[in-house]
Image 1 (cartoon, rainbow, N blue to C red):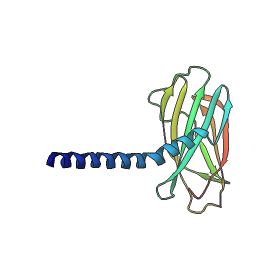
Image 2: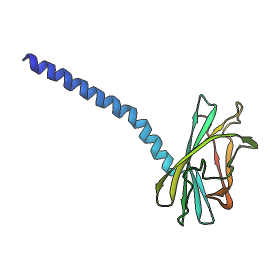
Image 3: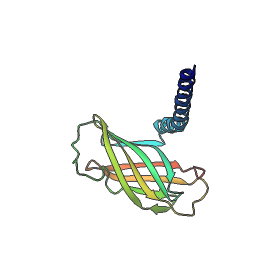
Image 4: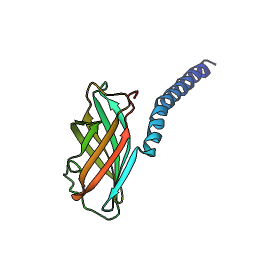
Length: 154
């Protein structure tokens, strides 16, 4: 009988751990689902840029944009390249914000996913428009501009 009690306690502990893990993973799954909907996309020269979503990080100091780039053709990317895009510009209303970092990885044939982080200004109007623009992707010239509303509540 004493062994049954020990096993019951272990089983309870495992069940509690599983419940906690599911509870912590649920918000992550919800966020990932919302990222798949996308905030906007644009295509030029057979290259499609989609802004999948964003998150406000570092106590509201920075924004992290999640993007996907898909090309109709196979374009070789320098494995040492630090960015797929040429000088991305990010505006909140009429104020240019500085990009801090860019990272990406290949996720499929002719498809890349990445993030760009930029500094946010302390003062932002209520639900401002954000504009993301670049004039080059994969060393291809073009114009990719996406505009969406930045929800200050996030």
